[in-house]
Length: 333
Image (cartoon, rainbow, N blue to C red; front, top):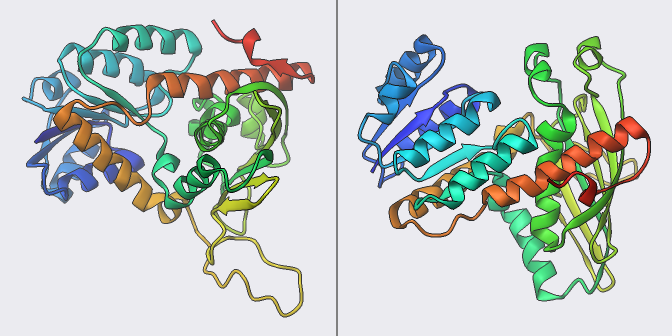
């Protein structure tokens, strides 16, 4: 199999390395808006380099992986589908709902699958939580608590083009809540705060957010995300039911110290960044994509899934602005 990678920044290079080491991938071709970065990546992992996107799509590919900047996602997805290629694209599908719907319409007419990159679906802890819910052993759910806390903020230039904390970071939690519980989110009440760098406020963003979500069966979920968790990278999902509870991310690298005497959990060291926490999950999602690229099977994470998470993010931004609850039906097209 011959796979192209569009965009070889931090996550793109990781994907290219993963693909290059997969036994069924014979060759990898990389391209980037920065030709020198593409050249250096290709040299480091023994891949081929394409000077432009046009050259990449004309390189005899069997599949396309998109890890370019968000603004390039819609065009690259459509061009990949037009070329008859199975497509993997990092979230989000697009920067706004309208563009996402346009891509969804094109994908619905295509013969090849599209997989969106929500790697938590391939993490063993999140998968075990989903299985526990599906088995019924937790009883009926009453509370879900999701957390994504970065140890340090991304650069100002990234924040300015990220779409904001709800769209850039919160979508992972929104997708995980939907996927693990099997329920839809129908209402949100969200707020945010800025106590860190001024560039968040300048971008119209927040560095810390909290959201209360109501699911379609009445279950309540809370989401707490932030950019300044100096203890380390903290990502968890707690699912509590009438008969039991379970938590993904509760391990010895949890960056949260116990205040109780004589308690030595977690033993550490804490996760320093997202690759340390989710590296294996990123590899599993690409293994899944390689398989569906080979047999054109169903996508494990569709554009429709990404759209639902984006609707929640949009509702949260609207709620933050209004300082009031927002029903999801209000933001649906």
